[in-house]
Length: 177
Image (tube, rainbow, N blue to C red; front, side, top):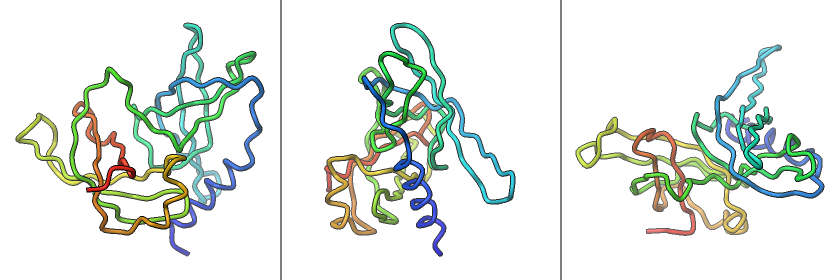
């Protein structure tokens, strides 16, 4: 079985079993680190996230996938009455409004039911980053998940990335070229 397909299946099973949050509100969570826990050689991934509610810092170890980068940001739903209870919304990676970012062209490499992988090229002459081709894995936004069957490997879309950490990137599947 294809490794990427297996990864998508595992993530779906994990996320579909998550409890529903009562009194849910949303905020932004930042990936502090990705941990790889492998007790039996099968490979389990967990992301350590940090988020703030009313000035109080919370951390959450969330079963997730291995495609995230330290510093990535996602929406997180949390229980407003008990903010330590939260769930990362992997379908909503984001850059905060005040974050500096650059735009480039990305190409879809692989298309799955809930996610895709893409590559993007950075020209270092324009900005001071490591030049090269980067690859990233991303879940579909809720608005594009219904249209995933229209995605094709080789299709081109706009990608934004962080010049301070060019591995942090988001492909905008609603912005084809």
